[in-house]
Amino acid sequence: MAYLADFEQRGTHRLIPVEFAGKTDALKKLSLHPHALTDLSQLAAVTDDRKQAEQGGALSIGPGELLQGVPEADVVNTAFCYPGTHGGRFHDSRRGAWYAGVEIESSLAEVAFHKRRFVEDARFSGPVHCAYQDFLADFSGAFSHLDDGERTVCLVPQPVPQCYGPGQALANALLYAGSNGIVYPSVRNPGGTCIACFRPALVFHPRRGSRYHLTVEAGVVWDGALEPL
Image (cartoon, rainbow, N blue to C red):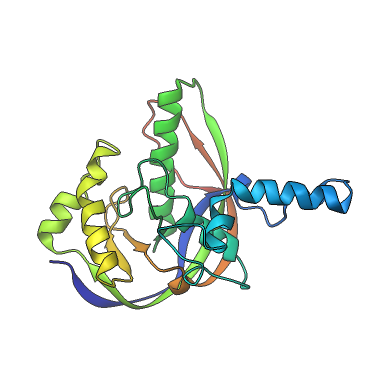
């Protein structure tokens, strides 16, 4: 069974597409009457899962768990409020988690794998260029670590999302037993280490690092490095 051990790590890496990492509210850029902006903001909030959760409108995570009034709170909260249709390796479709790599190479390998899958599913031809913002965060505390049996069943690389099932079941059990998250060997970067943090408040000092440019192409096993913008 997963065991607890201290995890002390500064400057972990989470790569987010630049278009989702903006600091400004797009509505504030519009030259509209204040009343019109208010109406639009209220309309946008109705369909914004993060804002709904921050106002107590989510079943899986309460406003008391989310960050408020700290730098990059929106970015951290978004990770927990937009879990995705199929979830991820250690979260299901009801509640997200903050994933990060101890090494930038681990985050690179993860985003490159999923971007390549998207390109192949969409049947794009030729190279696809993407820009990513690196978000750094620190962790300090007791986190769950996988035993040998759990590594075998939870870290299967493919097929996605079917291979996520065992990890999601384990993560749900740990989450509701009070776990802070899971530290595990990187699936896409052998020798690397990743963390899936279950608690927004434990994503310490979230901050912006470098921006990077990534190129992927369908059918090409790409093993290069991120290029700084």
